[in-house]
Image (tube, rainbow, N blue to C red):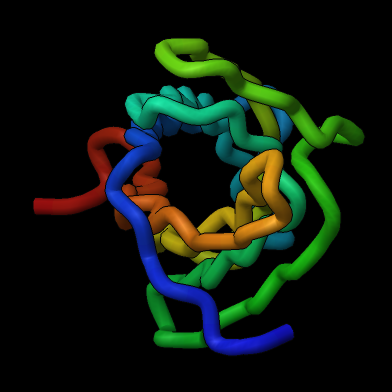
Length: 128
């Protein structure tokens, strides 16, 4: 894949939530849920093709995740359409962060990337 440019025609918002009932404090393994909103603010229909995540834990370890689509979908967004989904992330530390990008395709085949802004994964009441 050639070097794709980043575009600001897609707005991406992220929120995370710690899931104590899914976590195992003895292991340790901390589970977080995150919700993503993807909004097409451009004038053309686009399709989300791939995702790239950089997941960093409190020790500075980075797990890179690449894959097709999101949660088994390659959503098509018309202008002003929004697609949202929820997914999960396990961490071995009680805080970390996620960031990355999605790759999109326009109807004419042109491809571009949209940044996923960095967001925190934090166990509540764990950081002073």
